[in-house]
Length: 413
Image (tube, rainbow, N blue to C red; front, side, top):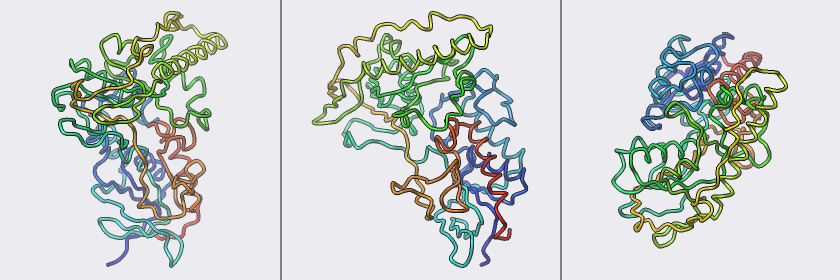
């Protein structure tokens, strides 16, 4: 059987793969996009039913395409996101094959380029773009063993409150996913416990502008590296219910049980760290810091934006923070479900080339790896803070396409 040859192979058909295809096509680079399942598969099967984008539609998009069914200041739901990417793929005539799994990539021994083993046969490519994104393998910390009568799931598996058995729910993780799922469950009348760790908590809107706008004009989206100690700090922000600032005080006032970080489990009892007050206070400071920077920007540029002094008013810590609950007997509390909103790990086992550091992390400069011809796209902080967002991946893809198109041709298409 003959081996198919292509100049550039893009692995992954989500937002990163489609952005890459657009820019490769613009530079007349022959390429192929392989997607293990369907376009935007994670939006289809790994997101809860009511999820909407965390940024407004004017922001969370490719620069060359707007949303046809969402107001620019609104938040696209999952169905809109799926349609958006499907339409984009059709509009740019992306050379995509769905249902093809890439199982192994190695450097050719007979010459330059790479040998690619897939579920649909072998391919040789001059370049490989790993566009599989940051949300690859859901992580559930090995804290609580399997328990009879208690269902455990990752947030990627959660769909809606009706999916869960009767009883209280513990949500571990208070980033965007955890906070939104906990709020949805509370609105559905469930008793909810929320384990809150360190987080940033930006205002949804301030002085008439969305926080995405503020991060833009303040130059924060283009930051080249995270502030010290904040590389892995989660951001608690939401576009749900029209978009509102995540406020843990409000959640507590509405009856949610707030706890610190989940620590350990023993004999039916979960222990929490005594850090809830510190975590909420640090989130408050992040919130207020952005308000102060925004006020300074308005003053410096003499903008006519309405004052919002009430946004600076922070209420007292909830009782759950000043008198923290450090232990939770799951049976006594009636907890029937634990939802782990604890993030994802990356999995590049299929990419067997010299493109990783001693810790197994991608080794690259702005997506150009240490292995000539291998590129990464869609990872957090690839070139800037915005790299893993829809608009940011489009910018990074253009830079990588320029680099790829400048390399000498070595594998015939």
